[in-house]
Image (tube, rainbow, N blue to C red):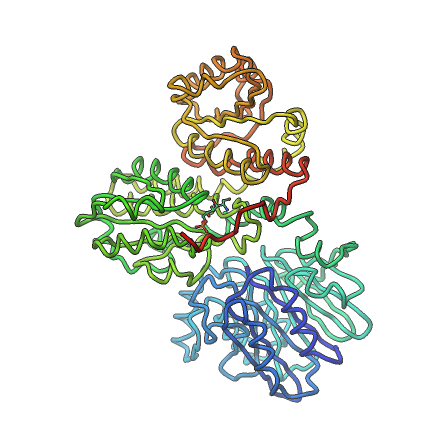
Length: 613
Ligand code: AGP
């Protein structure tokens, strides 16, 4: 999730860009850069200094030339290529006149790069984005103006993009376009702006417009003109923005938690994008473990903490089901001290949103010391866990600010299930048509999550009805169990109320003694093969006075007999269900916490990343 900004006609182009990049910081970045165009030349500065990138860029810009009226700025959240200055945006074409900035993922960048290299282009980065600069260069060389050059270049692009382009040989013009990644245009007298979203230009523009998918906008000091990818004129929808800056950074939501819950369909789409080669093989970001080694894996140990541990528990079911490899899941802080057994063929997978959780890093280091190969599943490119692993699968959930993890969880489950499908492909434990079916099914989960999110009002009504409750049990069977653990964790860390996740089958082995009127039991009841057993568990607790909430599929006509409240979700393949069934549980925890007046982004006693043991 990168941040982009552009301006044409401003008296202080560079100052506008740098201020806007500071406003985009919350989108996260590993590097930052600007490009200025004027008097037939393009000037560029970039810096890769982690969270200090914009500050470092400001220093770089002390030597910037004056008088440039057109400029682009970018903060990078790396998805392809390490977060080094050489990969920082803006990227230039071979002539050095054309500069582009990009937020998104170009799925077909590999083949485009090969074709452009074959035609003599020289690449200076390993990013997917740079192919755009060279495609536009060719179109310009063919005599197309910048708007037409961008439009025709985008016709061969597949994937997601919000881009902006300038060309020193066509001064006072920026051309922007979007597909899936966000892009807004802003206007003020004699000045036109573009940005990933409103905060970057909130205090500068007086009118704001949304750019829709496959629309191309030409910006000049006098204003803008929009066309679609076929070249037909389109009108941009004007936005009503009455936010203050802080609200704008949250995308109009009350807090980052609400924003990140809402971003889950996008997090899933981004994580699953560009994950298959032309031969159908499922591929990952940095896989320095050979296919033969993966094929010969004898045992897998997943190590993680908190929410990431729950995602790892779901992965165990998928890996064993599809790839038939024995799997165990360890709490990271326990793994290191249990003198773990590591043999030939042991693969350890470290799962971590931040990639900086010391428990998980120490566990994977211990595993490597004992000879295991390590795969990292992380959401932060070039994080410690990713750097030290033998292979990396990045979730692309974008920056997760709220301490309580939400979009990272669904992205981790999706990434781990992709890994399970890759293992099944290599080991031949699934027919290719079944791999294909599961792969397509994974891609459909985003829409199911969106549908579950649309039922927020139903969840809020249940949270209101249970407002006085102080004691919660979350139950599930099979992958419903880790889903219940995650739901309980959300409630604990957001509301400070006691909640316990439990395998539903364990109830009668002790916890049933705790069930009495006033206790709330929430059960994940979406798996048809576990349904009868869950129904009987719920009958047991209801008979003892518990208030029962069931997460059930739309077509479940019997659940109401044993549940006081039913939160409906669309049916999906059981192994995908955790990504959908967690949604009402996140919303329930959020609504309950808000009603209690909790700080949902910064719960007491907790940190976003636990870098101490
Ligand atoms: C989850 O909501 C918590 N913030 C916490 O349990 C978190 O999942 C855990 O600290 C692991 O963090 P990581 O994914 O960055 O390693």
